[in-house]
Amino acid sequence: MVNIAYFENWMDPIGPEILADQAHIDLNQLTFKDPAHDNWMVLEKAHGYQALPSTETPEEFYPGPEMLARCPDLLAVSVSGAGYDMVDVEACTRAGVLVVNQTGSNSESVAQHALGLMLSLSKKINQTDRAILRSERNWTRWDYIGDELTGRTLGVIGLGQIGRRLAEIVKIFSMNVIAYDPYLSESDFQERGATSVSLDELVQQSDFVSVNCPLTDETTGLVGEAQFSTMKPNAIFISTARGGIHEEGALEKAIREKSIAGAGVDVFVAEPPAHDHPLLGYDNVIATPHNAGVTTDCLFNMGKWAADQWIDIFAGKRPPRYKNPESWTAYAKRFEKIMRRPVID
Image 1 (cartoon, rainbow, N blue to C red):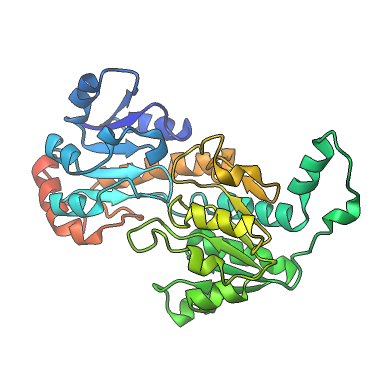
Image 2: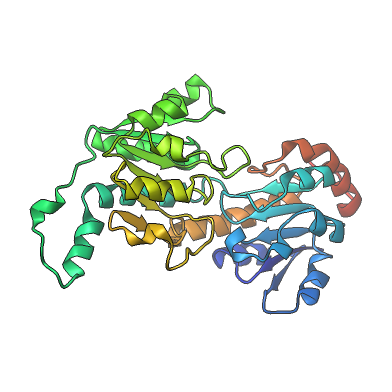
């Protein structure tokens, strides 16, 4: 018998339903309301840990050196979506622990959210909604002349699953798509319907800038004052990725000084943002609570994909979405020792 520990709820009930049919897998549902000592008693015996996002998990239960030291039989850590910034991947690799995610499960939902922010801001839907709700009527509709997306340029930072889907969707508006992604080849860009450019070229040429890359040491602060200062005055900035990739203070300055036309932000460094967060005071800023991927469709995908991937892991197979392949040799030795059978390599 192997066991998986997870806190609060699986992404969708489909996950536990799938795993319930696996007689050799035992699910252990924990809650942060219980004493940490009680939770650790379960975690220390776990073979798998299905983690919640960082914003919903106390740091004590982040997958890192402390957890790995306390959980000698832990074989893999799985995250609910695409982002795994709260996982110490290097520590997991050294310990022979696989790190897997559900990349692609949320691509449709997040891409549609980014598109919704683009449309709302370019058509001034957010601004006019707020104007109508105010008691003062010292405006006319001509004060809110919007723009179409048609024929304009979208710059995508990170042309992975979400970025490529967004690039595909906007082609219905005959948009020109350029992208910055240093990890892709020229053929990758062609296949994904975008022209490869540098980050400087992207921010200078785009009417819309959409951030769709993961948060890493390399991408932290990637979009700051230098980038915002060179954007077009009609540019709209969108981020549905992770807080910290763009500098919030620099974005607020760009909005305040009207050097860009607006922003749609689904992610913040501290989530949810404080009520007095400077960005929340502008009509041309739409803030959403990191819910771009929170749809019934996406949650079903994440729940099912995670369950299916756990079945693969405990069957000794290479999981389809593991992020530290260099851990495989050490992992295979640990798997054989703990499971008493070899992996299927």
